[in-house]
Length: 232
Image (cartoon, rainbow, N blue to C red; front, side):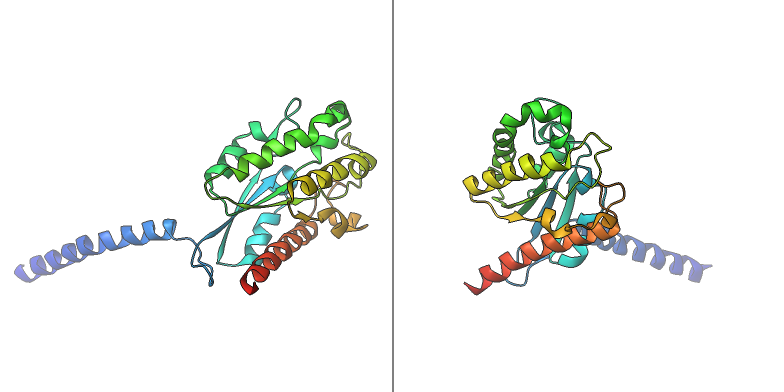
């Protein structure tokens, strides 16, 4: 009986001693971010956009490509627009606040597809102004993120009140004009797809192959930037 009591006391003591270690391990796991070999700091990547970002899966593919030195956050808001007046402005969505709270070091913004809706063409004069406001809101973050603007993928179907021609002739040129004015790098997702309509589920939303293509284009931009920074 005495022996059993002693063994039980030892077991209880081990549990008590082990418990703080287990708690500490959980806390450390949640608060430890991947480190870059060069700077020793976490690189947090915020993927901002509409359903093409939120639902197609490219941020997950990007995380796999970048590896453990990066933390990729998906802040896509389905149906959202650059435009602030009508429809569903991205800046009015909870994903926008979450993206800022993420304190990103890198922000990838890919918006414009929903601004192509025919009912919104009347507001196109404010597109660059509204996009500037969105970009500036990220530039003013304490983390001072590097910002890339990704051109929207092609539209291979206009069944959703979207105009492939308007995207090419209005949305993309306005986006490029803005990036030139703000001296921001672009990621030409549009051209990367070429005529690969088979990389889309419905002519608008990329499938798994399309998501992998977007992730590769974003990865190449980030990788090129950081490699060139380390060699200068």
